[in-house]
Amino acid sequence: MKRILFLSLVFIFTLAPFSLACASEPIKILLVPGHDNEIWGAQYGNLKEADMNLRLATDIYNILKKDKRFNVFITRNKNGYTKEFVDYFFTQRDNIVLFKENAKKKTQDEISNGTFIKKDGVQHISASEDTAIKLYGINKWAKEKNMDAVVHIHFNDYPRKTKWTMGKYKGFAIYMPDGHFLNAKESAQLAGNIFAQLSQKYITSTYGKEEGGLISDHELIALGANNTLSEGVRSVLIEYGYIYRFWNDSMRYRSYKTMADLTVRGVKNYFFKK
Ligand SMILES: [Zn+2]
Image 1 (cartoon, rainbow, N blue to C red):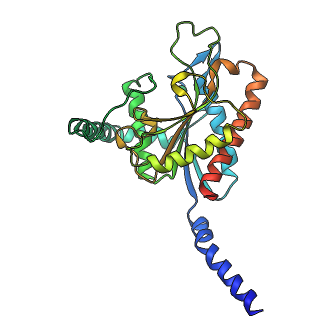
Image 2 (tube, rainbow, N blue to C red):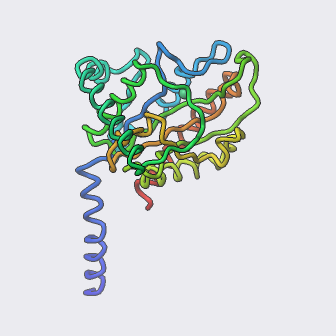
Image 3 (cartoon, rainbow, N blue to C red):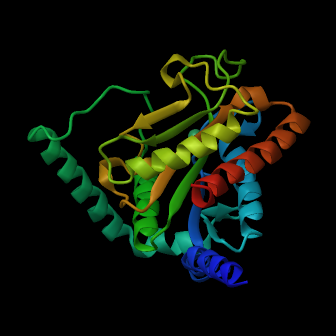
């Protein structure tokens, strides 16, 4: 009897800090459906990437929302950016520009003194000034609100002349911050957990530069370019597949559901099954 009591006490004390932490502090996740209604990213026929990103992000949001261990946020909904972000971009615009310029200057200093060496990676379309301000704004917001993770949701395309025809690549890829960024280590773990789930159902990108499907990157603002995310803010950018592969409506809707389920499973495995 004593032994049982002792064992149960050990059990309670081992679990207590974890469950108390969970009860008082849910994991804060920001979902960022890539692009927006003004600049919608890739397009294939009538299919716009921003709409697909939103649809999938909303499915992920709805699943996470049901789990009390998470406090989930999203940057936009069917009406555009949420009030939180419309207000933030508007009232904080000058501060966001300052935040961006300071961060860039710091990187330039690091490049000049040799502590940071730029690598060649996948070519990204450079963001317009307005898009850059939004993305840096999202980083600034995530940092101030102590998000535990920021997940960017995208569908892919690649530079080609005939955008109205089917492209040749397929498969998913997950981008994570370059090794020298503050949030690199934990982001890589989160990316790995999501990768493990998605790869059960989908092949990894057949595009040479995305080989292996897990890519570290130092240029994507979303991942915290110029070290704009702090250590505790994990960031991943998921390219779920090449847009032209999802032209069929029913196949696309089924894919959203499967992709959302697998992503959430990866997120939960990372946070709760270490
Ligand atoms: Zn995109």
